[in-house]
Length: 453
Image (cartoon, helix red, strand yellow):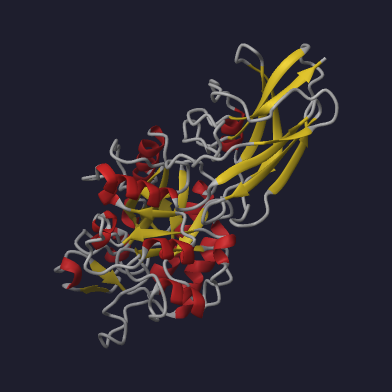
């Protein structure tokens, strides 16, 4: 865990206890006794999941992450020369809103000025003009097989990871860099639709993938397409035509690619994200659905186990009434939903059972802390734990976590025991459990009470 994360986890916060205590909770004077906690849906803006807008401040829809693109030329000016100001401005602005960022770097974005570092163009890097996707020659596709470009990408990825791996401002990084929009395709210049194939050779793709995996250990990465080259790497996937070209059996659809590469279960360890296809971002929530072409959203979530999706239409212009309600429910259905089913409290030990009612696990090693609250609502003792919610799988038996606590320095009396998973971003959206005793503002979950004598 980075120093910034450790400081954030240790940071204190004002406590507002959730109303009431768990059913059947009572002081324990002898051995611990199990108390059941009641379920209620978790907030739709839980961290690291749900619908994302393009970076900005919105009041129209709940969210915890924001999306942006950045041209590589904005940060890279020489073979080993980097200036990170453009990235820092984006990360700081998003973090100031209490959100984490999801983003990618690109070289070629149709309709936008080139993202290729100027020094490579000055050295004579070959580029291809094209009219497709409304580009009309504005951007250019580079020769990805030029050794100078391959070296530049490897150098950039190494520097990027060295500086930003584990940065609490970052939620996920999509690999980017290659293809139109950084989406790892150059269709129709793929050697089939058009005779020219502008994609890098396999050895170049392997170098880029390997360098990413080596450079990032803590921040989660996502590749656009499942492939033989990335199937065994610690890299997840993003489906940027979600609920449009997602479901099998069509060969180029996302889930069929998962099947063909033998990675349908990779979501258990690595995240899946993406973008709801722009053409259906609004019409998919009409009743009945008014899209001309679409796939079943719930089935797409069930088969991909996606945690997050860009869906800017939900934020701008936004939805109202029942349509908004359906979209919020769809956003909430993504990713994890952790609930504490029961707790056993004693004077020297706390045990909880945590189940996941969502579509995917929580992927980050955020630490859990416990606290004792006195009758005046003051936190009088804190206990860090080794607990992490990472990897608790949907549909599996509840994970049982136990730790010792030392109440010996507390005054005699009755104390409420609370728990929270701290967001390493100091003002970040707290992880909230799907329980009625969850305080949705502070992140503290009331477990029950103990007596100290």
